[in-house]
Image (cartoon, rainbow over all chains, first blue to last red; front, side, top):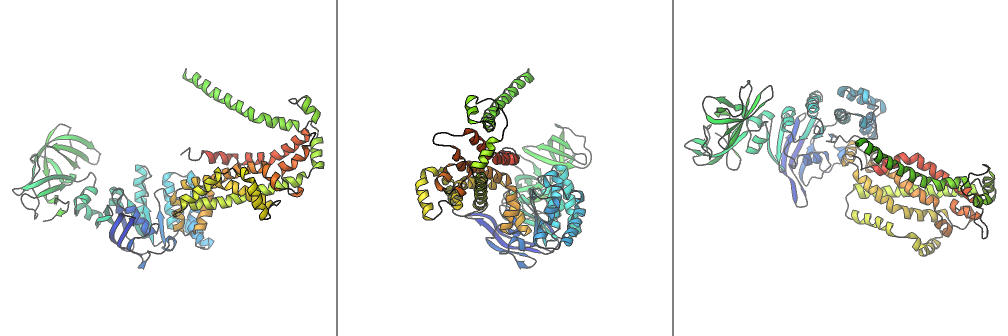
Length: 350
Length: 276
């Protein structure tokens, strides 16, 4: 086990800059998730840690050794790929043994490690099969098994769940998390799915266009986003963001919706964005008037989209709502939970 | 209605295939049957079954030619050529397909341009060159020519195939600690086997059957290959066709067997990429 330090790392291909001066500090044993929309550079950063991409500038340390010029095999990492990259012509056992046999680990020791990993992942009965005979979830487990047997300093996961169906994804999510709690190996995990990031990570690094937007625990990011991008990226359904300006100490949109503001240093006439999460809005007797547009019951909660003026506002209610489209309602907003952002999308604080 | 239409469609496709198969098999059948006939019988009743399945022709082939010698020569030359084509072809193709380097495209074009050269037209300079290298009338001379002939298409086919293999396999092996050579030998090439089988068969058949280059380059009886050796029976005035056909049947046998053994892989190879 080891810490990973990414210091002022940049990556560019010819003129195109993919990663711009990123610094992330990952302590020993932490489960860190790099998340962001596609093309944000998260996979490239992971591949740089793995040694599959050159580092244009900056340094990456694993366990306090700079590994910029160290070959992938000498970095003592294990990587799980999106398409699993199992060797198709080898049995599951051979797949899991491959790295160890290359390292010339004695055969009895290899057997012990493979059996242990197979036991943890429930692969014992599949060891003599070939990857093509396995289902997606089983292949995913083999890919993890291949990583586990090596006892690496760091686990790297590159969107490992995106080829699985929704139900299996939820199950594997829990398995990976349980595995980390058991092994406590430093893990860097890349995904574009913020739900995956929220549920699994100790800490999330939100990236966009090669830059880190914010780093923090899942709830820090959720409750206290530093800008509008993070606010909208994290959380499902996404945070409502209304555009408008401050008039007489309150927020007002161009179509006349007036909302109370939390304490802030914003001044009258300033153009701001008003962000409020769906669960901080209630249907009420007073407040903004609107018409119910869509009702989406999920069982545990109900999502309602309300048309207010030109705006569509989403809200989540955890009690059962008896409401139908077309109904006139009023929305009460929990002002204390509102996030304000300036014209550049940066958070305005009180 | 729809099903009867389908019946007609499938039936006519089947009929066409059966017809095609007959067209392909009939000459072979004539060859095998003629192998048991005498010269007179071949000319009097060319399409009939032989009077008896006698082994007289076989005896003649055995007695009058160095048949085993020719057979072994053909085996040796074909195997050596295929082995060298596969070794050098995969090495070149692997580098072109899996590594990025400046002249990668140019190197591929260089190999492909080899396919456009009609080697037989260049036989005189080729002969002079081999003569200068003292390679005329040697196995090595013949093998080198075949390797040169086979490499362009081998590199072309293998490059195309190796490019389709997922990059992650290579990267995963690299992280697992495999050297570049090991990645090629233990991960990539086993997966490229269908393409290698295609290359092997596609080259083995013409090399095995080749008459032209041995005729020009080989003069010692001990070094002759089968097709060349069988010309003993083509006389200036008379040709013993029965014996000739026996020789041809024997010559066709090994390559036919090889094809049958490898056909499953061969078909898998040519349909690769079509399905997926």
